[in-house]
Length: 284
Image 1 (cartoon, rainbow, N blue to C red):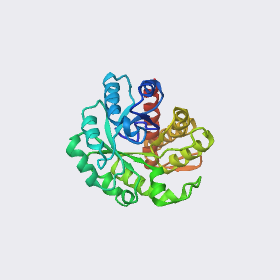
Image 2: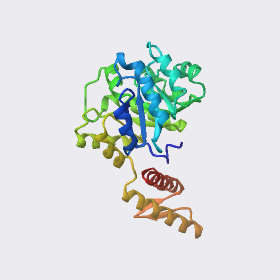
Image 3: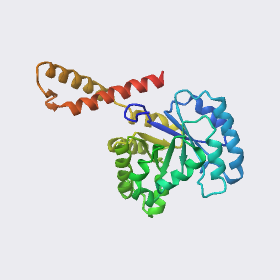
Image 4: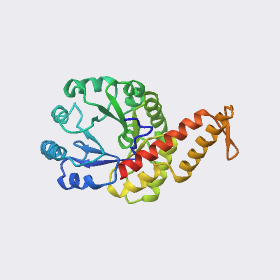
């Protein structure tokens, strides 16, 4: 699914052990769900969570939402059983924590076969190997694990996320080079809508496809931030119309609002309209 047009604005973590949360997620206006068997599930609930999640996914009714199952790491006592179970679940992809090299994905694939994979990008080595990870033939998505990355880097918290920029940028470049989905990390203060809006805006400006979320209260902010605005849609339509008119007159460029419009701008404009149409379709 092309991340340039298919929306991934809001990607909500849901505990795989909580039947009520799994049911509620069926009616939330999110573009994707990460059904979590890792951090959101206590050690004594790990095995039960597998069965609870499998039953929920078999029951279905998650609509057009992309369904991703995050398993425990393969170096844990639960990881391999999670992987084997997830391979049979009705999900779109399996998300592996702390991917540090393509070899981690190769190991997972020996259990899950050709099931599409997503990678949590949350270690320094993962940042250094981002290009190779993004190029893995089964990889379809990357998720920034900014909390773990900050821990590993021993950074201080800054609202501008400056200490994380090298890693965020490295992964973003890798994902865009390979055409895979990449979603930004979580914003921990789930009651701080203003702070979330600022971080979503930063992530959208950088080029992320959407944001991972830890609470349903964050969904609306992310959906607005990562969707084309009315002004962007209007400009895209006018750019396309002006360029088409210029081409009909044998010209290679057009002018809109005092700015040159070339073919590359039209490509972006068409992507904006395609994404707006896709958002309207999944929201219907």
